[in-house]
Image 1 (spheres, helix red, strand yellow):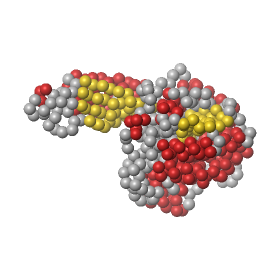
Image 2 (cartoon, helix red, strand yellow):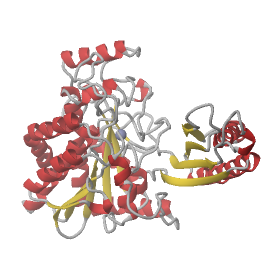
Image 3 (cartoon, helix red, strand yellow):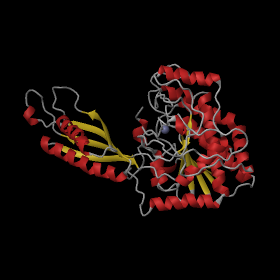
Length: 495
Ligand SMILES: [Zn+2]
């Protein structure tokens, strides 16, 4: 469900690459000057470490790609990452925040404490071979249409590289890898944030696969996930319909209200729903009507106001139909608290690492996918976007909840052909072959290099934290998920 993908960044925003060893490079129309980060021995060491571990990381990523386990059912995927972290010397705490597939792997001691997030859940029903033509690996099975197999492996790779530097006495502090399940449904990080797992962490890093590469300066949408239920009375639809009160009538009036309300909401707001129950056969007055509705906006205040109005619509529909309405907040996420100081740091390390390089065969693979999906055949985008004018596109993520409890730095790295549909077969395909592997290794490097800067430059970490404090202000984080354990049992029964 939840993704922050940037689709349409104009090529004019791509940074032109300097040739040769000089790294002093400024993005063209920058109001914020950003130059490539300087190479340091520690930074070179983490990049070399990731190259050394690359084949292990690719193998790990490919295993998770093949498991393709969906939200809260990622048992083999979580175990693969947690076991690998343990073998690398991390202390691993499994089953955190009430989720058997969530874990935290820790190495080192003392401050600073730098965390890195890893996801590994797949999407149902989009199984696909690592092939440039649409062809399921196993019809009906899940697939990594958001590239989370790469996400988990890259972030663990970065944590391992940092661990080696701490173990060698070259860096001081603690590194924590967060195994965060269920991003596509339920929002595992929301439960982890709610349960205080990020307390005492100085900064958190995360990345996401995409079709371009950039340090992210744009937020994500706040969202609430609602279940609306109308309960009426069943009756024979022909012999005694006057005794019936229809839950389906109530939901029709309710959704009509939602759709009329669209004219009177901010252009930034989004409302989308599905009808999940409306009776089974025409000759029974439907007792129950159920709607699953999401409300979104870039500002949480706006979502809150939509929530109040939605409750009124449900109440009104119930009055009109003499049914009972129940509105349940099932979950939701906050909007991302963007850390610009962190984004500048990530950007400087992206510039230092340089663009991706693709073989002719990889570009041909990407173009074949683009042709098949009807988008311009431009291949893979190798460069790095600037920090300015990044488009604000729709989508929500549970990383946003983490961003309100700890300063969070977020980067997108290309793993898929430009413009090819997301949460769909093309992303599954490239997440299981060399194009995705390259993005995964590049992501691990930019995360690790940026983490090195946070360990060795107290001033930079302080700036990241000061911005977080200033932007957060007096706001106290309170998650949208209800009290009690995460819906692990419910997830076992789903696809
Ligand atoms: Zn995703």
